[in-house]
Length: 139
Image (cartoon, helix red, strand yellow):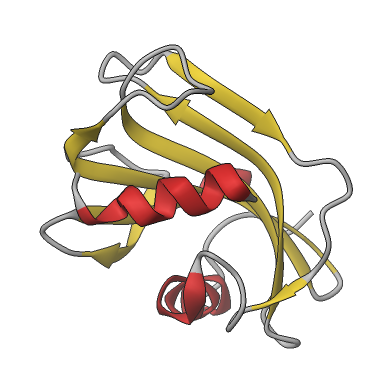
């Protein structure tokens, strides 16, 4: 969770790699683009498991826990839009060449309300709207 917060705190500086589908943008700003991978969306009852990608306009500096600077990050989340809750599963930091420079798996993370989650309602709200559009596979 701490690394996720650090990644999001750094989100105000970030490159766009213009990824092709299945990555669908849900939030765009001059500093960061947030995308959801519609090919890896799975839903069981009210919980959707998915991957988000954060592409930074400016590469982010190396952290103590990484092997180098990173240009983007991917986070796997479980989201319950109806209850407005999310939980972190995994975080990957990717260098400009797409190689993983940091990888964290969150063991048994707790559900957090959108208001208290590091991704904030400004990302989770548009994400739930995208999920509601039926993008991605239901498994």
